[in-house]
Amino acid sequence: AKRKVQAKKEAERKRKEDARKLQEEMRNNKDEELLGSCGFRLKEAFCSITAHFRQILPADLRNP
Image 1 (cartoon, rainbow, N blue to C red):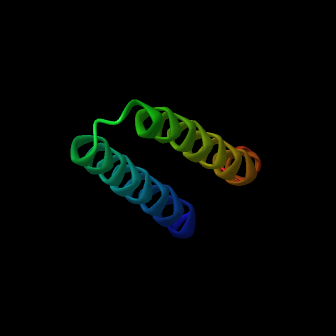
Image 2 (spheres, helix red, strand yellow; image 1 turned 60 degrees about the horizontal axis):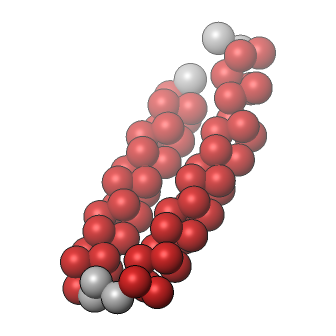
């Protein structure tokens, strides 16, 4: 149970860090092309986080 909580905390921390980096990039260059690629990277990051939780959640549900 401790490991599950740790994994969730770690994923949350990483997500916040990635979001912060993205915002910094967007602030640094307001180029429209770059904003487009930031949006794409954000979507990519979201998909990988979602996939990560899909891997750990079934186990959570099996062992409450």
